[in-house]
Every structure is written in structure tokens, then in C-alpha cells.
Length: 626
Image (spheres, rainbow, N blue to C red):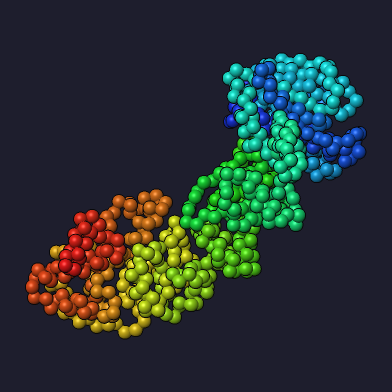
């Protein structure tokens, strides 16, 4: 029996790396600049341990573009490499110098902010370059080396002249990648991937204009300075105690320069156990806009941009937030392009949910008035969280607010306590009356308020789903939209009111009403209500309306509801004087005309009088005035 090791050589793996390792070729710049930053971080670590002589204060990475020579160069003045290290880290695929460094200094430097782990980033250069050169000089007393490869398994390695410590990677850009010789393209990529790397990154120069002198004698003076494209110390890397509110706002403007609206508030994350997580999250002003754009929060790993698709690590309802998360403990695929799911991701997601809930609760307790003023702008996120996350639902009971038509706010327990005596149905359940459109349902709200009932404003885009959730979680309550039925039928607070109509009266009246409204769409119902209640009211089944709304708002065509015709109840209050007057009218045509006018008014109050019917109604009313 023979045993041995499978030999993976550059002949068979190199083409795969070049073609398939990275989904986006543009990532090459992130990888090479990150390697250069690592070289600087390693040097800093070794210097702090007394293993490097000389100053390490002016560490910098520089990106240089030479369109004429068709080269892109990434230079650093970091640790550099000896001939043996080039052999070890460049000529052996997937031998990560970062990984070895972390292992060596594990107990001394706490990771040192080293970015790379896989040892494959350098080879991303060959996705855009037909030839790559390395010029490197180690911090040690050894000769400078030049390495060159054209993307085949063959390479050359020789001594060269280089005075300064560090490494230059020179990419000779291939014909099919000439876009990476455009200044605007490189600027775009550096801003995207390298904006917050922890070492200064220079890309070209820029001109600054200042004024010298005072008043009319002042002169503009132009000076050329290095163009530093990154912020090495962004807000999330600092302690919250070192930052003021204006610092957080300035960082938000840095993240979203085209967003001119300030966020409502921020949450600074700073966790070191059981995982490392830092970041700053911002609550934007959403109002009723259920903006499900998931590309708001940016994910970083040791200050290297990874992705803005953070589903999984951020709970679904919080993907509408803005900001930054940074964690070396987030499992990434080998190309650092996206998340891989594991237990840490779930822990981080749960922690973020808890931090957001705690922050909201603290805000509510410390300044309720200010919290109420922000509620309209953030309630969509809170309601979505209550609907989608059970733990968040339980925590939100302390701070989630419900506002009535008069603008008064209450928590759930406060509101139920307020109405539980006055608003009870025949089964003993507390009836929560609500409106999702104060203007359209004004007449129903007015009638409810006349009877001293309270009406909530529940007008969010997912409110039908949230109501279902609340009814399932809470005992002995039911939600009914204020126009779902007549108020006296919904809430039974005393003895039933006897009807003044006989069965013959109801039958005769129903036949006449069905001659003036479409009986396929309107079901005529007679109720014994207070004489002060409306004579004719159009209502809809609460259940059927909810099902249609839920279907329309993402229920996936629930039970085929979206295709069902609109059906309504036409409730006739037999005790109203107008109904008695209609019955007393002996002229059939006059009776019909009176019912037509009355039912048109009922339709008008619900926005159901349209087209020809509306035109005719208005014309007839004008004629009545002549």
C-alpha cells in the first residue's frame, strides 16, 4: 500500500485562482493595499517589542498610476521581505504571512490589527495584470530583491537596487483590464474599499487654495499637497467617551456624503467578549416609507471594507439602518467578499438586536417627550422588529408607542388600562378601535368620539400583520377598524335598543334599496341602533379586509384574496328619523330618489362614489339648490 501527499502545484491551481477566486476583479486593489497596510502594522508591532531599529512614525501606503507605461504601483515602507521570505510567502501558494505572524506574536501583540489570513490576496493581481513585479527591501540587513512573474508558474528572483525599506508591487495592466488605468476608476475603488484603512494611503496630489493677508489686500495662494484618501481613525475605532454628538454626525456625513438629512440618533457598539465587534449604527428618518434597501450598513473586517449585504449578521428589520460594523470574528469566504454563516454570526445578530432594544428603552425612560417626537420617524423599524423578532417584541413592550387621533401617546399597557372599561364587546373582549386614514374615515371617528370611545392611528405599511401578531400575543383584545361596523354593534355597553321597524318594513325597504345600489357588491343589513347614529353606514368585514390588505402588503397572494371583488355591508339604522321618513313616503319614485341620495352620501363618506355616479350626484345636489 502506497501513501503520500497530493501535490497541488501552480500549474493546476494558478489558472483557477486567476479566474474564479474573486467574483469581482476590482477586489485586487483592496487585497494589495490591505497587504501593504499589513506590512506597516507588522513593523509597528515589532517596533513596539523592540525588534526594529529606527523610526516607524511615517508609515504610509502609496498608490501610483502611470497610464503611459500602463502600470499601477502599490508601495509601502513597512516590514519588507528578504529573499527567503519572498520564496516562502510569494512562491508558495496560500502560505499566509499574516497567519504565521499572528501565530508568532499571539501572546504579545493581540493580533496587531493584521488583515490578511488566507495568503491568496497577492495573486488577485493577475486578474488584471499580464505581468507583476515586486521590489522589496527587508527591515533586516539583507539585499533588496526583485521578483517577476507573467502569470505562468515561472518566475524570476534576483537582487536589485532599492534604498528604502518596504515593498513596491508593480502591475503591468493587461489589455482586457485597461479600465484600471483610469484615474476615476482607481479613485472610486480606493474610496470604496480603503476609505478607513488604519494606515495613511496617498493617491496623487491635490491643490489647496488659501488666503494670505486681510481685507482687499488678501491674495489667494495655491499649494500642492499629498492627497490622502482615507481616514485611518474612524469613529467606530474610538471609545464612545472620546466622542461628542457632533463627531457622530460628522462621521455620518463622511459615510453618506449625498445624504443631507441627519439621523435621529446613533448606537455605538463596542464588544470584546464573547466576540469582537465594533461599529456605529444610525437610525434614519423613515416615517411611513418602508424602504427595504439593504445596502445601507457597511461591513468591515479590521477596517477593510467587505460588503454592504449584511443580511444574516444584522436582523432583517435593522437592515434599514445606516452605519458601519467591524469584526475580525465574522467568518468570511476566502475572497473576503461575503459572509459565511456560523454560530458567531447568530450571536452577533442577537447582540445587535439587544443593543438596539436597550438603546430605545434608555431613550424612552430618560426623555419620553423627545422619544415621542421621534416616534413617527422610527416606528416603521420598531413595528417591523416586533413583527419579525420575538425577543425584540418582548423588549419593545416597554417603549413601543400607540398614538390616538388626538395625538396622545401611550404604551400598550397604558392604553389597554385606559380603555378596558369603556370599550368592551359582547364577549367581554377589549375592543381597540383604530383608523389607518384619519381623513377618509373622519365621519366614523367623529361618531366614535361622540360616544367617548378612543381611536388609535395605526397607519404603517405592515400594520395588518402587526395587528394579527398583537391579537395572537395579547389576551382578551380585538382590533377593529373604526369603519368595520357600526359603533353600537361593535361595543355593547348597555341593553339592546329595540327596532321600530317591522319585518314587512325591512323587506319592503330592502327591495327598494337593492334597486338603487348593486346588490352584488352591497349586502343590506338592518340594525337597531341609537337614533343619533348615522341612518346609512357602509362597512366592510374586518376579517376580509385584513386578508386583502395583508395579501397586498406581502402576503404572497394569500388565499387568492387579491383577486376577490370588493364587498361591502350597507347597514341601515332602523331607528333613525330619516329611515322612518323614507318609509312614510307614499310616492315610489320619491322614495327611490330619497334612498338613492342617502346611499350616495354613505358611499361618498367612504370614497366609493366615483365616475358617472359622482358626477350625477353633484349635478343633482346643485339642482336641489336652484
